[in-house]
Length: 215
Picture: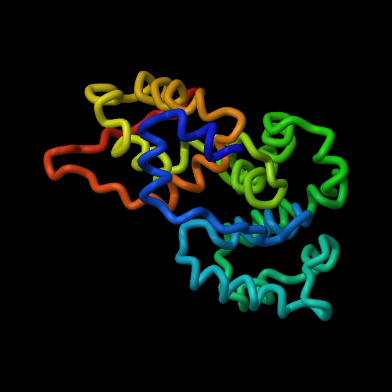
């Protein structure tokens, strides 16, 4: 059982005990293309604003689905009317262009490793590793994803494992976070979903150092 496995880490056992169990979440199950469009719309804005803009974007199409050819046929002004910035419009168009010439179906991705999927999708403008990792977790249901570049994941780990990360910064801290998460395999996705929900408190005297992602 995943919970039993994660609870072998005494620190994580406390996190589980203090945190409501994550609920199943599949926003665009099996639709990788649509999930990428939504992730781009959601970048750097609130969830409420992103939801409203994405609904307006879908409403620009007769069947409420921005098929790649249909999306590319829309003018900049039409797409701007949904509330999209010029940069996000370029990113959405990049996803659509990619989808026209590359496979984006679930059976295709099911043959690939997590890292192969990351490398397959990050050439798309506007799509980075974090975006693909969210897709792996919430659309493709991959069980062992560890998005260490996610700010909430990092800060939650620094709260919970303060004694193991004290004094570390930069790449040394980045490596240590990976080492802490290693025993969570093969259930790191579930572990991260707990870390997102955990309401750990940072001591007033504790300053969270910044993590420099490995290159």
